[in-house]
Image (cartoon, rainbow, N blue to C red; front, side, top):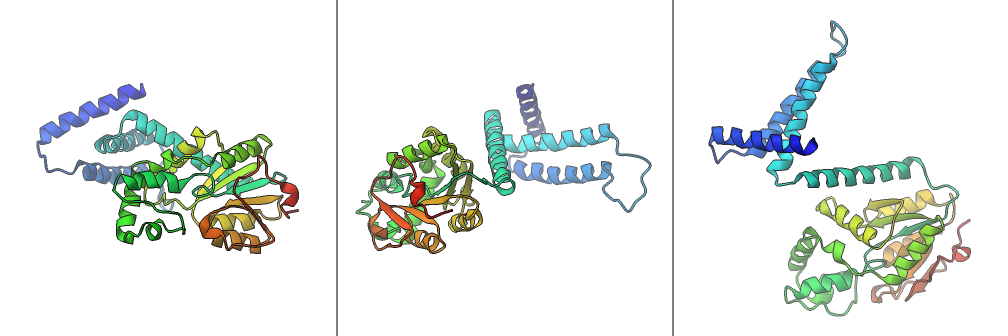
Amino acid sequence: MLFDIWEQQRSYNEVVKAIENRPETNWAEVYLLGLIGEVNEVLEVTHWKRHKKHSGEPIRENIADELVDLTKYVLCLWQEYGFALEDLLNVVWEKGEVLAQTVRHQFYPPDSRDILVTDLDGTVADFRTGFAKWLSLHNIEAGETQSLSVDLDTGVSYEMYNSIKSEFEASGGYATLPPYEDAVEMIRNEQKLGTYILVVTARPQNDIRRIRADTMEWLHSHDIAPDCVIFGRDERLVQLLELRGRSQVCMLEDDPTLALRAANSGISVMLRHQPYNEHVTHDNVTRYGVFPRFVKWEESGED
């Protein structure tokens, strides 16, 4: 029935556009303005002005009639921007899963469970190798890894690097990155033991929204089922500090600054060895060329 409703709306839109016969019309703008107008209609039939006297309770049928108009404008927008019904269903489902994860993480903290907070790029996902393949398509040699900044290692301007990286991200590049198999195996083993897995990544999903879906697809393809995924570079430190003291906490990281900040806060860090973090030394940091099969919680320093 949902498919029939989708096709009914598409057919109706085609008829209206043929009647209008104005190719210059911005239909997305028409639908958005219509949507705004219908929101006001819903407010009216639900008696939102509490300071006014109403003759009775809101009439359910009137509310349904206005919600129909809202729904149809939303369907129009999905279709106008070239989405299929399957796209709508998949994206709505994925967003629902993310929201459910976030709420559980915020309001039901993982008390009494070991907590593994992990970065992705450079720690679990081999961003350098995956992005190097992309750079080669643009005749750019990736060069040896020396820093966290790929543009410095390649010798290209930041402007060019940023443009290419944005293209990489917008085309789904994060879903294609090769994994560090040792890290993937350890995370899988820990989640089987009931360890709380919190993935925190600095990937710019606010700028390119598909990055969230690509990230979830990558995790799923490698049988990693995190309890929560959070985007934001400094968010991992905020989360670590909030979780500290609830139970044993360990951090997987490659960024030298974040690793040291966590270590200085009393967090145990398992550091993926990279040329750019060779200078990192701290009692709470253990360097690994290859991660072990399990976290060594007895060495975590967290009680």
